[in-house]
Image (cartoon, rainbow, N blue to C red; front, side, top):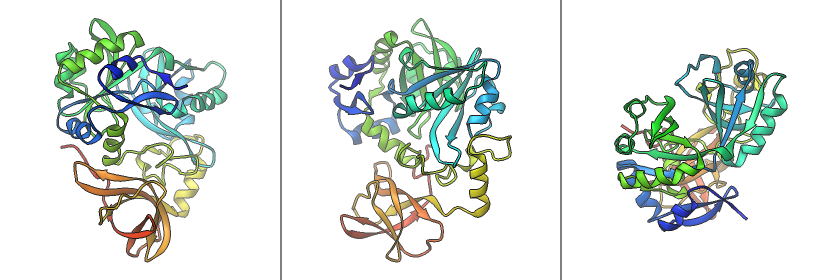
Length: 354
């Protein structure tokens, strides 16, 4: 039976259509995916992301340990700032992509829901003496507040001005509804906004307060169309144990110049030898929807496959992210239900907020 987040009763009360997602009962939509998508782009949406995993990494050697586990440079991250990073296997394939937040007595690591146990076990298995890795996911609820009006909504529920004014990828502890709360200026929608971590028992009151402030409850459906439109990677699609961060176009988060980390040798070889495939944006010229797994053709020959695809509501275009052979130079098409639909290479991200 799927697990339920602390906001389950709120979702049911507000008419959320509940589905099983990664072992959690979560709303796929409330009033409709397109409406929720567009409201987040124009105003502010709130998302229950309490199913995400939260790990604590602590001890005198915690920073050095994470530096050797992740592809990005953790040593450059100061208190009050966050860093996004892939985490790799020895062969360069991706364990997960995650965000690290330095806190006074530990590193707060947020991982993908479906990968929580795997990530915890991977980190714990490699932790040296003196470094402690804890799975603290049960201790947190998480609400994402995203969109152009997110700052106004946070201010309306009593958010401190220092929290409201956080720069992109800033973070810190602030008073919110009378409680000490960890607030980050991160998100998964392509909009500026916040991700708010708080004890599970405090989540319903904040959810209701943000709704009263004008933020609209938004489900998993719109969360996916928003992240896809912004060309943000989804583990299991754009990243996996068989897809490296370099192939996924995440070069800027892979610091090959830093000291050794797991997967570095494989990634160095891949870069030196030249990538054989790379994530590519495509604009499907017809009304056909290119779903994940559809083959991509170049001059009629298979040259890759779609990792994510669908309609981009803001652009009103059918788009796709695809892992394509770097040598493919001909006319592209996507095989949808047995028919080759013409496609053009498109710059990513498909959408970028102004």
